[in-house]
Amino acid sequence: MKNKHLQNTKACGPVSLSGPAFAESRVGDSAAGLASLLTAWYHKAKRDLPWRDTTDPYTILVSELMLQQTQVGTVIPYFQRFMARFPTVQALAAADLQEVLRLWAGLGYYRRARHLHNAAKYVVTSYNGVFPSTVAGLLELPGVGRYTAGAVASIAFGQAEPVVDGNVMRVLARVTNLDANISLTQTKRNLWELAARHVPAAAPGDYNQALMELGATVCRPRNPQCPLCPVGRICGAFAHGTQNVLPIKSAKAKPATVHRRVFVLRHQDRVLLVQRPKGCTWEELWEFPAWPGAKAPGRAEITRELGAGLGLQVTLVRRAGRVEHQLTHRSLAYEVYCGQVTGPVATVRLPPCESGTYVAHRWVRPGALDHLPVARMTHKIAAVALAQE
Ligand code: SF4
Image (cartoon, rainbow, N blue to C red; front, side):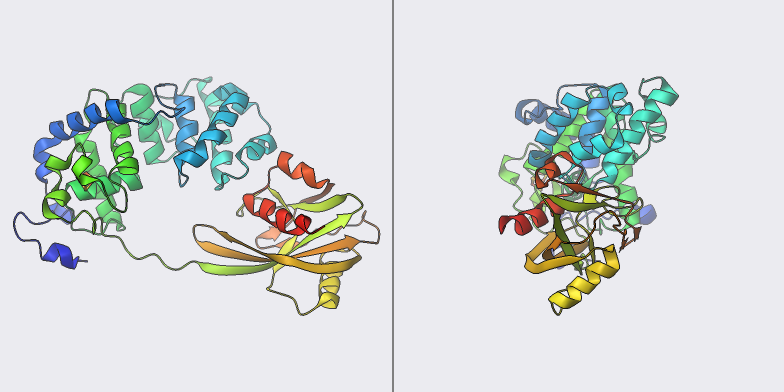
């Protein structure tokens, strides 16, 4: 896939990193220069973040998992609360999963919390609480992939291991003026090789963090700050004016919209929550019961639905509004209904959800949502439903 801006590049054209012709770029001749420029800049310009300036592998693992798909500003308060409650790998290993999920609630991608909990248990039971220091050892931990293993190995243990995430791919693609689609597996493989060749033996953790920091703060996806960039003088994209068209990526498919009806049902001063099963999005989190469907035709049908789905007799059903939420691969559109349970509540039936059946239910005061593992979507629904009472 050729970019027309790149095709027009004349002198010293773009680098091809495909197949056996995987070429060294101008940065290949300046690997030491790239490392020293980046590391020197990093020591002066790095942001003051609570997981910086430590070589504790547990702290680094927690921060790296939280930072996946999540912005730094969002992560900071979650990280601080999490580390205050679980300051050591032993403390996390001994914790109840529901409490781990509660502290993660709102951060999204809850599988990370589960993996982190399992990884802590693995380190405690298989390594007596001492983290393995090699990429191979770290890859044994649940939820730890090549990127996270490289980050922990290089930052905590000074191993000359590469890291390649979205920020690093963008920086490397631009520095090398890369004319290849970074969405392709082969290109990613080549970028890992390129990154591995450039990790310095001295302070590899600082170098890796510098690459990521550059991508987050200077070589941003839009409007990269080339005149201020510490590696501007060896950057192929800056030299050829291609920084705003690189990296080349496949277009993302528009996420499908999932329509659901969700019910906030009151009995006295409590509302009904149900727990999602394992193996689905938001697994084991609590939420208001919901099932497929857009806006229902009327109150009578909704009442029948609730009787059939939950085994509850409900009156005063009203539509409270609509809540939308964006996940990575789909958009959610929930029609929110409120109702008052008038019959017995002891015989709640657990209805199906999109992957299986809800596994438990409980009646809670609305304020308890702040103390349970619930997704941000559930808070949004509560805000719509309860604001009108
Ligand atoms: Fe990115 Fe520009 Fe720096 Fe090159 S010079 S690495 S394109 S910010």
